[in-house]
Image (cartoon, rainbow, N blue to C red; front, side):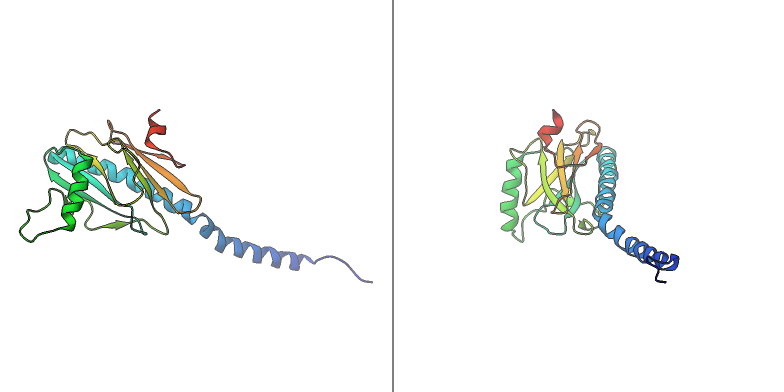
Length: 195
């Protein structure tokens, strides 16, 4: 007499194998989403710290974002006292930086080692997609971008996109009055958010 079907032991072995495969594979599938959540939380905390430091030390801080680096580099710089935001001045500063002279005065902004001791990088395949501030004519997708924090407690209105390069892009929006960084779980421009 021939029986057709599987025994209980065979079914349990197959389920155990499937469970092991899911246990190993699922974290890798959702890792990008987990990374981007932790990065977003990190930037929320960082923006609060930088805003508080700017107010306490009566200094202008800026979050510097390198859009050309593949690993998403960023750091925080500081200048004493209130400093104006002039987009054209930054273009001139870039030109002067490439023509550095030995007897030139030190740059106005210096890396603040109390907040970021060195250049930081985004984790696991994430990078900056674009940065848009209220003082820009168009969003930047290459070069160096800045988000300013002023001694009065104000922050330059900005939208920073963080992406994995495929289908996952989140936008951090910096509120100019509160300094709070809010998360939007899609690609958005500053103009779309301000409406």
